[in-house]
Length: 327
Ligand code: NAP
View (cartoon, rainbow, N blue to C red):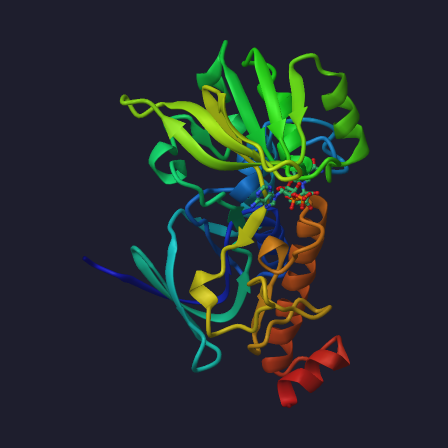
């Protein structure tokens, strides 16, 4: 197959809010960035049915917001490559090599915004029944559970938000949580507690997901962590929202990461490799909001722009960056 080779000033890996913001800022700096979209254009936000807490966007779907961000970045010259980064080589310094299915990029600077993916329960039956009653996305799959009973696993914002969304379709939801207090924000908790369709099963974990001979979910095997009691709880679907893991496989052994696999950055969004910046959930174990990812994407873009300017002989705006380049 013919591979297209390109030398770019800025390549951004990932097309969520962090990536598209970095694209907007570097495009407006005349750097004509390329965004490698990744397997899910828009990242996790594209799977979110409603965004209510992004300032200036009082309500609307995740895909709506992503479309607006994309159009705004493209208006100033950002280019979106609807491909997936398959390998990255940072070993020789800038320019870095990024290979996709169809292209090979040489990137003077790289901005990593590859985000995070839903965590798995890793219990028997989960892998086999994924797409057959096991789901990690209410927005994508809720419709298929009209008139059915489901369970939701988790106690954070995602679990409660998705439970509220699923009440549009299902007759009943049991939220299964391993503790007896929710991690979700207070406003979401209140809405869930007031919703007649939602009940909670506390201090309980899923040990197995069971299916019938047609390969459809029929029950979850539960265990109460306080009493040790186990039982089968009949259900038509299992929605799992127990957090996320950073999408770091392209960078293992190349960028410094913390013990949970998040890429380590400093305040300038610099990584351990000079000329490589990171923003959004790949480097943020804490906040993980559209608003924080946007801010980090903006900072990474400005730092990358200053890094390029410094390298090209223009006066660096931030002495810290100059020192980093010279060291
Ligand atoms: P999260 O906040 O990390 O919550 C994960 C939940 O799953 C926790 O309740 C945790 O229990 C439980 N859990 C983790 N591993 C488990 C396991 N192996 N078995 C059973 N339960 C397990 O994850 P999230 O809800 O996906 O949210 C991630 C981030 O995105 C958060 O910062 C959140 O604020 C943000 N977010 C925000 C919104 C919003 O609208 N503001 C919406 C979605 C996500 P414990 O509580 O016991 O640890």
